[in-house]
Structures are given as C-alpha cells and as structure tokens.
Amino acid sequence: MEKKTAIQILQEHINTYKIQITDGGWERMVRAGIARDNIYEKLAFRADAEKQIQAYEMAIKALENSEAEEWVDRCYLGSPCPYQNN
Image (cartoon, rainbow, N blue to C red; front, side):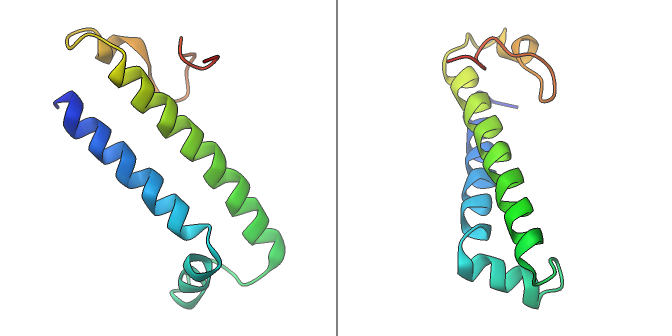
C-alpha cells in the first residue's frame, strides 16, 4: 500500500470518529442500534474515540516523517512507537 493511500484511510477513520462523537452522530448511532442511549456509554465511547483519534494521528505523523521503504517497520498499532512522545 502506498503511503498516501494509508494516510487517506487513517484520515477517514479520524473523520468518522469526529462525526460520531458529535451529538448528531451519537444520535444516529443510537437510532441505528449501534449504541444505547445512556450517558455512561456515550462518555465511554467519546473517551475511546479520542484515544483512537490520537493513535491515528500518530500513525499519520509517523508515515509523513518516514522513508518510503522503512515506514512499515517503524510503528504498529498496539506496540511502542518512536512518535508517541512527540
């Protein structure tokens, strides 16, 4: 997969989470049966979404700052990444 394509996919995931954590996005998920309509689930989802957004942003940063051949070996979701502290 090309770096540009990977970045686009990650950005789409970020955009999806950002929509879902809005009140309107949350209401759509409740109507679709994806989520239950309670404040605790909404807050938990929002906290998890913020973590996911941060992880995707770190992955994008890693891709943008790496050489073409070596980016695959640098960062994996769920494992230490040299860009976590930036």
